[in-house]
Length: 314
Image 1 (cartoon, helix red, strand yellow):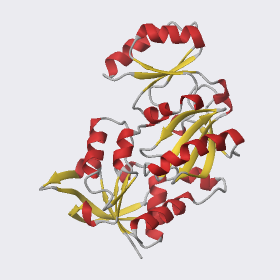
Image 2: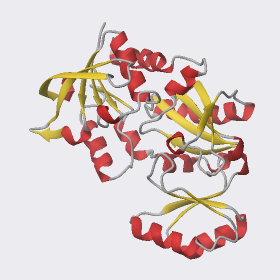
Image 3: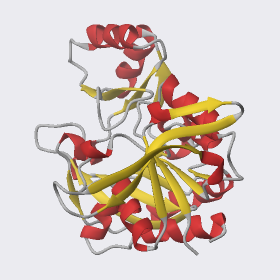
Image 4: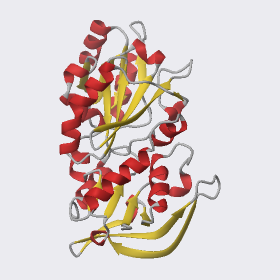
């Protein structure tokens, strides 16, 4: 039975369809006959106890330069949909958090993917802290002295925003780098929250694995190899995707996470593994679907819709 779905995402005209996971999900939804109502986060309103959005009917096509058509602008009550896809990108700021509070008012009567309460409580670099034995040495702080002591102990370190995405403002510092004081000062002035410091993992030169889990089960993986002049492997900043086979350690990490992902209603999750350590658990708007398919892997968009249809009553 076709579903009536809504998608909350960034402006569709700006996406790169070759690597956009939301777009892959929309293509599959349309293929299955589901109707799609599209709106951006700024169009979300709580009024008279109802969560509504100003949006349009959306049709998509896998065609560069002609990948979408919108029509029938209208104000819709989101509680009347079968499912809502929560798919805007971070930063995970107060605007994003407010979105989760509003969408929580319609879930689970209207299925929101991922569960907005657990998205709010499990941002990428916070949820992962529940598994310290799987992680590299890690610290969350605003203290310059703590960062200095951490670098003295671990030599090469990474400093990154606690609520960023796509590799933005991620810095690698070696023992002799004299920019540490200024860099910490910049982070302190940039945002009121702490930032994350981790031991640099040399294995990143061989790649940073993105493993995708659907309802807690392994669905596929790619390896993201940083450019020669980069410490970051994110594809947004030039990382190269390549095929990868999972190791026993990768599967052990996934098995540890699976029960909690499922219990939290995190249908679509992407975890990052460097060497033998877990660095992030991505629950806001994970990516990697199209890259996995490009290397002959599973049709992850279809796997996601199988779960949504089962949960949403199709």
